[in-house]
Length: 483
Image (cartoon, rainbow, N blue to C red; front, top):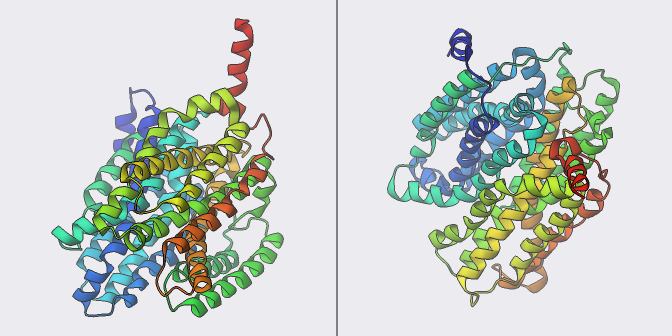
């Protein structure tokens, strides 16, 4: 839809409610998140259609990760140059086009190329969608908007496996990609109507060398983390991680000399942003491990069917959705610092409790605990994702969203790596050929032991961090005036 149509639609109407903007952005992100996880369930069926082995289909996952790694860091600069609305709706169009090519792919090579194109769209949707929200919503509505935005990021990986199972069982696997088409068309239209076009004021020189170094570093790290969860690829994953770290060091040296690096690490000096990145990264190790550990736990440890395990795992999605109405009130009452400290401990303890699950536990109780896990973890990420931008200047907002999204994607992948490593280490220590209940228990305790260290970083937030966003100080003043 052209800019003229957008301007005509905009005449004579008020600025849209923040929930409208949040849900438009969230819908696009849900499409991307769901697609990424649904595909994993369908790989064996797709392998039979293409006449290849199931393990060789993993390239369809890693090719998508490659696009994310390369293009996410550049997304902020591209949005500044061409406008956030223009880039966001173009990203939706590219993602949908890539989805169509995926569905029509006659060979594995064609599918991989289509996934690379699809990943380009996904890399732009994630950070630019968040940038659209930050630039369109007033600070007083930011917590509410972020709580709506976070839901797809949490429920996409959880709903993916059961949805993929249904599609593979009752439909052709190509419908995994076709379902993106109507969602994308609706999203493209709504973005054109409701989202304003913001462009950055500064014209930065594109950091070509940094683009190459960061792409190799992030791509190698993401590939390494992802492949570490598959048996027999330990040496290869260690090699990729080593390459990623080497190029990462090279990038850091380059970034210190470049006036406008593609990933601006000086943002870490901003107190609320740097603390949120570090604490959020530690917490995301637990969140990233769950889609890997929980389905295996219920199928291998409990002997449940894939469908039954999928139903249990969706409990966390219900908890995530229930959080939306609670987060603004809690943050207004207690502020970001106190809320992050207390809730972070409760959320981590909830997932640590999964280590005690046993087959003789009532499934209703397990479901209820997972609902609470999803609730508290969703609250934690809503707070992190909001307070991170409290002290970021408007002209650095695009760089900040790209930086934050890059680390978010990296740490979720690292969570899979850590969960798989902990599981395999326990199996070796116990002499198990297949994962036993005690091995899963050890893995849950290990990943949550890492995430609980985020508490020390949460304590470093200022007591007034995000006060004008949450309304915490205003709430205290009003309470004092009543007495």
